[in-house]
Each structure stands twice: as structure tokens, then as C-alpha cells.
Image 1 (tube, rainbow, N blue to C red):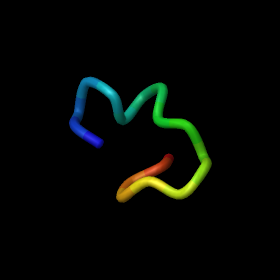
Image 2 (cartoon, one colour):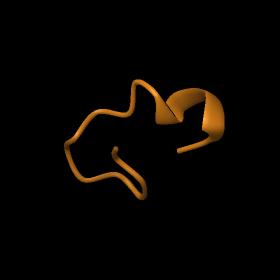
Image 3 (cartoon, rainbow, N blue to C red):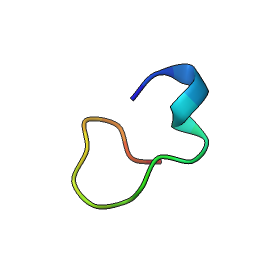
Image 4 (cartoon, rainbow, N blue to C red):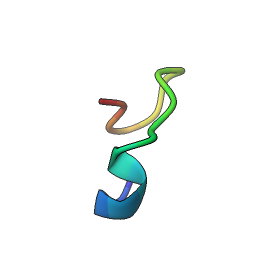
Length: 18
């Protein structure tokens, strides 16, 4: 997850889901 995607990162099991 990059800073641009960090906002809408899906809480599914990514590297950095906010």
C-alpha cells in the first residue's frame, strides 16, 4: 500500500491496511 492507496486501503490482509 502506497501513500496514495493508504487512505482507501481495504482491510483484507494487505501490507499496510489502515
